[in-house]
Image (cartoon, rainbow, N blue to C red):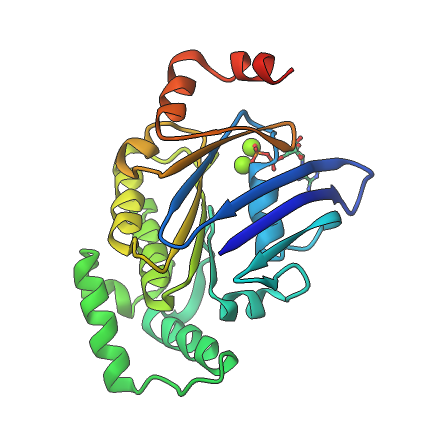
Length: 251
Ligand code: ADP
Ligand code: MG
Ligand code: MG
């Protein structure tokens, strides 16, 4: 489904190569995790896939269901079914959460050439999803993320994900210092949304997150490349032995 081939990325501002040939395929229905030391390029990978400015792809491809996503603008990527969970969700004063979500859902539908969701259908859906995620109905009426606690922001992010029904979810939880409760929330949210047609790429610095989200495949990234791929046991190996021995193995 998501297929990344020989991806090379440098910073636009300076001549610094960050990704040096990343190869990765996430199949529908699977959860892939990327772990790796700080500075190895994990966040850069998620930014490039989301279409953030400041990065230049110098070589390689990234496709979703066979369609090149690197040439799309961020809205087109979302319409194609890509969802990126932000480490630092934006606050939007004056815009109610529900209004925001309805606009997002309908913008996506429009971009896909689908009919808008009626207000009745929208209300029914959001109430059900919020209930599943144990989100207070009050939170739906408040301005987007304004005054939300860290945990509420996380919950809201998962709600966005649930409402947009993406094909491919990318979560970068690396440096955000998630506490155990927030980590559990993210994990529960991901687990609730796991389905046959949906893939996940979970980027994390901590093995702990993977205790709650059981990944199908674990990749280790170091110095802009994936140096090892394995099953869930690879995360435990890292937990016990650190990254240094993997780097040495690679060398
Ligand atoms: P990770 O998420 O694995 O910790 P990053 O993708 O954040 O790694 O960073 C990879 C490397 O690229 C680091 O050396 C980082 O300092 C550098 N880098 C990323 N973005 C920028 C930027 N905008 N300006 C300067 N250096 C950057
Ligand atoms: Mg980092
Ligand atoms: Mg990072």
